Image 1: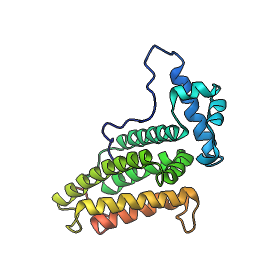
Image 2: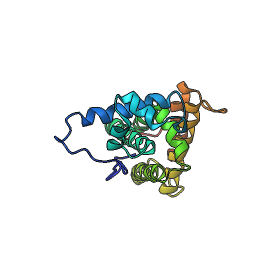
Image 3: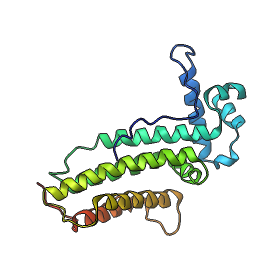
Image 4: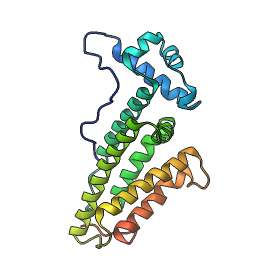
Length: 220
C-alpha cells in the first residue's frame, strides 16, 4: 500500500510536451470514453472505433496515442492506482497512537478509490487472466502494498502491541489478497458478497483480529 516504484504505462506512445498542444486533452478523452463505455459493456465489446468516436478523433489519430484498446485499459489501471496511492498518502500517520483509525483510513482509501472507478476495477480483474501487462502491473502494485503492510506489522510487533505469530509477509499477502477479492465481489455484486455499506467495517475487523488478536489494540 505504498506508491509503486517506477510504474509506467507500457505500450503507449509518449507525446512530447509542446509538440501537440491538444495531446493531453485527446488522450484524456480516450481514457474517459473507455471508462464510460466499460460501465456499459465489456472490453471485448468495445472497439477502437468506439473509443475514437467517443473521444472525437479519427481512428488513425487514436493509434497515435495507444496501440490498442488493451493499452488503454492498462493506462486506466495505472491512473487509478496512482489515485489510490494519493488517497493513501492523505491518511494521517497515526498508527502508533490510534491503530484502528489508521487501518480504517487505509482500507477506506482503497475502497473509495476503486469504487469510484468500479468499471475499470472489474475490467482489469477480468483482463488479468489473459493480459500479461495488466497482470504484471497489478503484481507490482500488490507487492508494493504488501511491503508497506509488512513494515507496519513488524513495527507493531516491535513495540509490543501486536503479538508474534505468522510471518509478517505471509499475513500481509493474505490480508491484501482478501481485500482484493472481497472488494471485487462487492463491486461485481457477486453472491455471496459483503454489502457495500459494511465492507470497510468487516475488513477492518478481520485486519485488527489478524494483526493484534483484538479489535481494540492499545495506543503507544
